[in-house]
Each structure stands twice: as C-alpha cells, then as structure tokens.
Length: 602
Image (tube, rainbow, N blue to C red; front, top):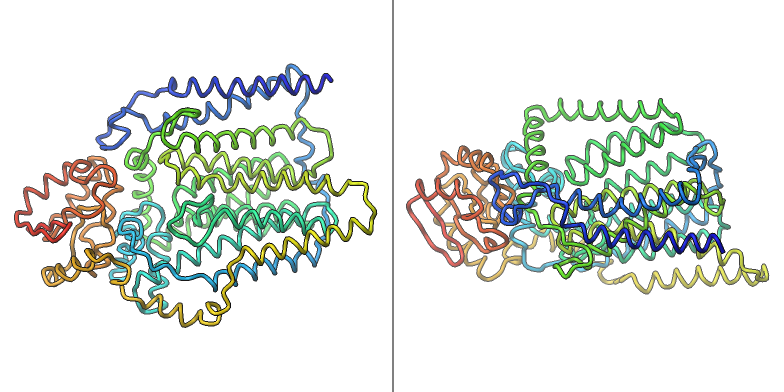
C-alpha cells in the first residue's frame, strides 16, 4: 500500500509541475535584440532563445520533481550498473528472424515498385530549392559559392545534380523520383534499426518475431510516399537512424569491434552536408555516446570517435578547398539567423493557440519518455535487459533533441516530424511489456506454440493487406520510370505557369542570368537561366548584412523577376528585404508585367 500511495503522490506532483510550467511558459522572457530581420519575431519582439528556454523549463521541471521525490522522499539511490557493457548478455542471433527481416524489406521493395509516380503541380517554392541550385551547379560546378544553402548541400543540390548526370537529362520527374528513393531508403533503414533492437531481446524465437512484426507494422504508418503529406518522420532523419543502428550494433557486439565507431565520426561530419538541423541532433547524439563510453571506461573508443571526426573534417577541408570557406560562412549564418527568418512562435501548452494541441501532446510524450528512462536508474528489477534500457534512454534523448528543431518553426507539420522517434520508443516499450505478459501466461505449451504461430501468420497476412502491391505497376516499372523522368516540365506546371514560361523566354534569351526577388525559387531552373547571385531562395535572407551581400552580387545583374506567385507566403520580399528593394527600384527602371509576375530590367 505504501508503494501505491507514493506512486499516487508522485503522479500528482508531476502533473501539478506540468500545469505550473504551462502557466509560467510566457513568463520566461529574454529581451529582444533587434537584428534588422523582419518577421514574426520582430513584430512580437520575441527573442529566438525564448522558446528554447521555455521548452527546457517545461520538460525538465517534472524530471526535477521526479528525482527529488525518488532521492529525498523514497531514499532511493541511482543505479548505474545496468549501463555497464560488461554486464550485457549476448543473446544468440536467430536465422528465422533474419529471414523475416529480409521478407519485410522485400515487401517494402515491392511497395516501392508499385507506387504511382506523383505528377501533381510543382511546389514552386520548396521543390524549386532542389531544382534551381542543382541546375546552376550543373552548369558551373559551384556549391556554396554559387547557392546559399538553407537545409543541406546534398539535399538541395548534390542529390538532384548527381541523378541528372547519371541520366544526362534534367527534369522535375527525376528530382521527385530521388525524393521517393530517399523515402524507401529511410523505410529500409528503420526496419534494420528495429531488427537490430529486437534481435537482442531475450524472448523465444516466436515472440521475437511477433515483437519485430508489430513494431515494423507500426513504423509503416509513420512515413509514406506522399511527398506533400506531413509525416511523423522525414527522410532527412536518415543519418539519425543510421547512427542509431551503428551505435546499438556496437553495444552488443560480442567481440567489441571498434570499426563501426569510425562511421559515427563520418556521420557526425557528413550530416552537416545533408541537413544542418539534423547535424545538430547527430552531434548531440555523438556527445551522448561518448559520455556513455566514458562511464564504461572505453577511453580508446572515445579517442577513435574523436580522431575519426577530425579526420573527416580535414578530408572535407582539403577536398572542398575554397568551397569549405563558403560552407562555414553559410552554415554559421543559418545557425545565427534562420529562427528569425523562418520563425513561428511556439504555442503555449494547453492553450487555444494555433497548433497548441499537437505541441502539447508532443511535449507530454517527451516528458513521459524521459521519466521512463530515469526511472530505470532507480529500478533494481531485471524485467528489462540492460541493453533494452540503454535503447530506451538513447531514443528518449533523441526525441528530446529532435524537438529543438520544431522550436524555430512551430507549425503543425514541423512539430509532427519530431514525433516519429517517440512513437518507436513507446511502441518498443509497450509491446515489450505485452510480450512479457503473454509469455508468462499459464498455457499449455503446445497451445502457446500454436497461438504464437497463428499471431505471426496473421501479422504477415496483415502486412500483405496494408502494403499496396500492384503487379502491373511492378512489371511495367522500367517503362513507367523512364516515362516519368523524361516527362516534360510543362506537365508539372499550372496553365498560368506554362503561359508565363512561354511568354518570357523570348524576352530573356540574350541574358546570361536572372535574379529572383520573389519566392518562386524554381524559376531559374524552369527558364534555364542560372541565378545571378548565390541567393535564389531569398526567403532565407533577412539581416541587413545578408541584404548587402545580395546587393553586392547584383551589381552586374541586368534582369530581376520582381514579383511572383508565392510572395504572400509570409512577409513579402518588398517588406522583408527593404535594402534590396530600394536598390532594385533605383537601378532597374524598365518594367514588364506578365500574368502574376513583374520583371524589371536595368
């Protein structure tokens, strides 16, 4: 009874602390520092670190209450023994589970070959990021020196450019196919991560298969091939999943092979070129991993990770040469200004603000995951293996770090993208408890064996039902793919966009480049004219310093596309970039209006 009473008291204290933190959310205020960037933060005099410190306070307050209660009231001591690698038992690998893993991956491949290719209208802003920069790089070989990168050079330029070079053909269809391939790669990586976790569990084989199939089934609903839908995962999380696969594989390697740790250093570096915000998470995770190895006195392993990081940074420096300087400048500007440029203030939990409901649910899941992880520190029960506890703690840490990326732009889609790892965590935890329960049922051995076989068979059948496998699409895949990647750009444009392209082409054929002052970032690609400056995604600009950079690079520009279709997405360029607008109006006198676009000539 005493234990139950303590649990009730603890739950009430934690709940009270959460509501108190919510009440004090808007009381945490850092004075606004005016940096000249026009956006929501300026209008509301909101410092970019406000949401970060509010997040820390909201999440950590229940944890502090929990720790105080456990240590001071219940007089419990923290137990780090289960973190010791030397205490990890090594379960045997089951070939049947491996075969089931291959079967699921095979089904994923069939699903990929069955999908219909998306021929919806182009997203002239977001898809333009992956088209115009890649086109310019294809022409002159430039990277950061030719295009200001918002997310990552691989995601915005190199991936599309590489695929175009393979095909010797540039198209919107090939760019979209690459995005679909990224989703496939992510799905397979996620299944491999689940397999790596489940195969180290100590359940009997049939139960392991049930465990694996259930978690894999849940993962199917976390991301799909609809590139316009908001999923619980983004394919940009690929480096995080690969990092976790390598780290978990290392933890339970019977020979303690060091080689995989080299790849952790590689991932911590290459992710900066893939996605800048994911690189932050990866490097936090690298520090987390080193701390864990330090607790296990694996100093040589930590040294290996650090040396590999240094090596791959030096390799990047010598390989990229002058582009490395542009990379550093670009990345530092993104870290410094992007929240002010893109910023949407995070909603107060439990309020009626837009997206508050989704944000509150995500924050509560993060708090719960952290409390479960720290509860392991006080538990002496052997219900969970040491390896499983480390997995849950690691995933909890990733979930906590991932949400930081939603603090800079706190709309529903970006918040939702941070929840995938939490769904995997809770799925692993809940299903683990469920399997423990059914494993301990007092059933006839023969009946239990047949019951598990029936569950596994049912789950496999359910997989076949939810995966859309189209035999005709599979058989005709090479033909369909060729048609898709060679589909003309006009097939992806609206009637108005097609009319604009046809009308403006004769007017600009003698110009070497054009400069955008519109958010329609796909126009340089669609018109087959490179942007005159690095700044083709001008939505990413804001500070006076960056505006002056753009003005400097526009000195020899003869043509500016001054307005477009997406300029009301946020603050319009004229209002957001007043220095550039003033320069254009002083130096570009001739105007032409074509449908939704205004063009200015020097």
